[in-house]
Image 1 (cartoon, rainbow, N blue to C red):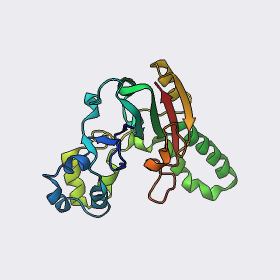
Image 2: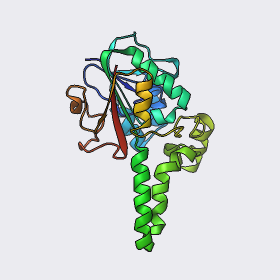
Image 3: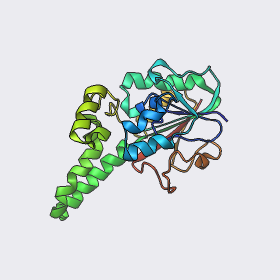
Image 4: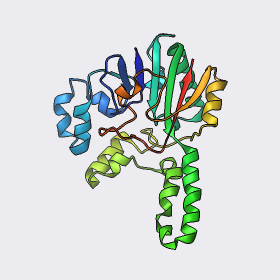
Length: 241
């Protein structure tokens, strides 16, 4: 079974049949010519992620399309990627995935769940009304709605020393240039509507551990190293071509 893991970053899978595809700096550095010098530039958790990357990686800029033939792939997966694309670009991306899928192929999408974030926000307002001391924590709920739409600096860079932050921002650019900001948000209504409108046959809501993809849990793409849900605030949708 051929599965494309698009925009994978460092969340990769080394199982047979999976092809991890991204244009991130981590994957570009994974090219063997650069590997020996990587420890000179990245340390700690970043280096651990780099060293854990498997060999079944295709370094490719997805803005140039998906480098596979029409009707050639059994399943396509991408997680917390779609919301980083402008709306018109996102639609073209979904259509391109539909092109490479075989008839009956499965398109699994994971995005931040706008509905859940809004519900949590409303619930927390009511909670603050009866628990005033909790008001200081209310910005956490607002951050889940807005933070990645307005942030200026990439998160990983913001955690570095002042000198490294300066250099990374100078060379790599701000959060938007690196594709870290959210350009649109999705819930179970607008995502399903978009998929049906571009010609997908059926759309199903899933959970992190349920899928139409056979033996999905063995791929461990929606769980962490301990088997727990990797991104708990997510919406899981699958569409059939």
